[in-house]
Length: 166
Image (cartoon, rainbow, N blue to C red):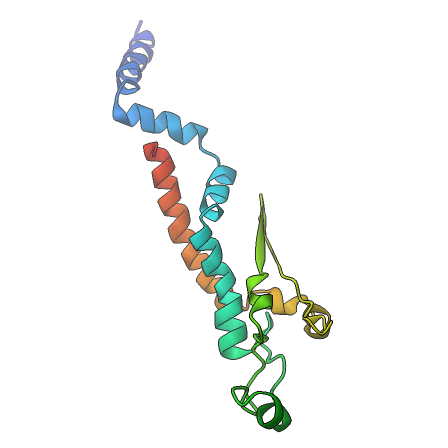
């Protein structure tokens, strides 16, 4: 008889517990998947834009570097004096002439990662992805660290939101 009482007591307590807010939370947590949270995090367009701006703004426009943190090229004195005085000789390429390349950036969200792509074909036929390789679309180590920080915060927020049933 002693072995029956703890089992009965445990079921009795859990039956009452499951009818509470905590019980609802426990049920939602069982149904929540890591994949679901991942897709919710990346369904936020502001978040996607922020990640793409790590490449467009932080890496290319401000530093002129690829995913290996290497400068992709430098403007010449001819570029500055003949074509565009805003492109100062010796400063890194930004790859922002018309802005079309930056606007073409897109992100595909997969269950186990993200793929970043862009249209590298310029009006004159130059293919930026061929000339500079697809490393201009990748994240530097510094950007990866920023992404991980942002991703952890967003993941935590989305997890709580989904657990609370919002």
